[in-house]
Amino acid sequence: MTGSADDTLFCLHFLGGSARTWDPLTRELAGPVRIVAIDLPGFGEARSVTGYSVDDMADHVARKIAAVAPARFRIAGHSMGAKVALLLARRAQDGDEVLAGLTGLVLVSGSPPSPEPIPEDRRTTMLAWIDADAETRAREARNFVRANVGETLEAEREDRAVEDVLRTEPAAWRAWLQSGAKEDLCERIGILRLPALVLAGSEDADLGPDAQMALTLPHLPHGRLSVIEGVGHLLPLERPDELARLLQEPMATRQPAPAPTVPPDYAALIASDRVNSRLRGALAERGQASDPAYEPQALDAVELAILRAVFGRLVPVPGLDLATRLDQRIAQGGGDGWRFAALPTDDHAYRDALRTLDAAARAARSRPFVALESVEQDALLTLAQRGELRVPEALGGRLDADAMRFWFEDARSDAVRLYVAHPVALARMGFSGIGAGGDRAAPLADNLPGFHQTGLDAPEPWEPRAEESVR
Image (cartoon, rainbow, N blue to C red; front, side):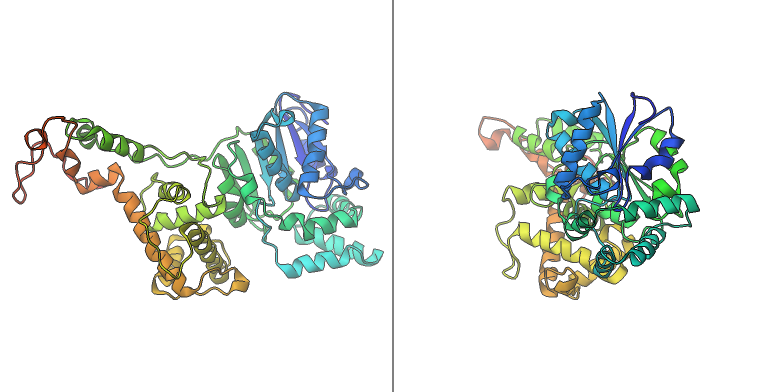
């Protein structure tokens, strides 16, 4: 434990690591930051401690935090430790007094709330050698460390990392690979409002930038992704100096695109007595900026991120978050009152279709849908439109090609309906029909403002002109 109590950082290690994983960072930060590195149950000096589930490990860390009792602190979670850190952040947001001082997260090559995207053959190999003879374990432990770095570690640092792997309790190793890494905490973690620095090595095969973008950032609206070039999975050992530099920077948050604004002349029409108060209230509600930390109700955080990407291709208006509006509508049971017989109810149809679309992206491009270039996203959506998007169930497909075609027809309709109901879209189209009413109590024929100029190209003096573009 070193550094200033004004900035305390609790550090949780990766699978096979220990508190010693953070020693190089501790040396780099001696002084400005107090590092409290914790051995998780089954690892390092806590090898004999039992309780290997994500909840058990979070309990263990919470007790360590309570013992130090800092007024303010951050948690850094590396790989396996990141999933534990996310659960602790959820507890803090839910009001856990022990964690009340948590001010931010640092997630390094983090295991996401969703199951880790690790190939099963690699998982099987890792499980096979942990109980092997000493010679095999020593060889495979070194191979494990070397396979997880972008460049060669210096000999002493590599040797210490291998020693940590070898002193791991095999039951803890197996528990993580068979259970913890597979655990789906997506809905439980939900949306976290803490600022977060999400770090990924460019050479990390499984938990690199794409995985962080698709599986971790959707839970962190105030999170910022930083990619470290040339680094694999073990950033605290590979580039502790770079990690130290990033940790000392302010916890900058990811800034959402500003919401589009209603042009002044159209805003004046909405505020005028030509628009009845009920419609004015509805337009004001539709025109409100979306909460970047919106907690999805019908979808989960990952599915909402995929839907945002889909709607971004259908209605590409920066700052207009139609996906959250649709999620609210689905959760409240709203809609147009009908559905295709080939599809389940809207909530299940959207969840299944979005997961199928993401599985199609991974099958075709080896990347999640949200990480694809726009032209690649469009290509998959075009296949869905044509009824040609086929993803085997074994690869994550939940809907067949025909069902995806029907869903995409609904999705296009939903996106357009939500868009044209927005006052910015009405302004862009120059729709003045909202100005035909009012709140007059006298007989309608005598008091509604209405229209007087009914010929072609003969607008009323009060009508705003159509916008050339959305601002």
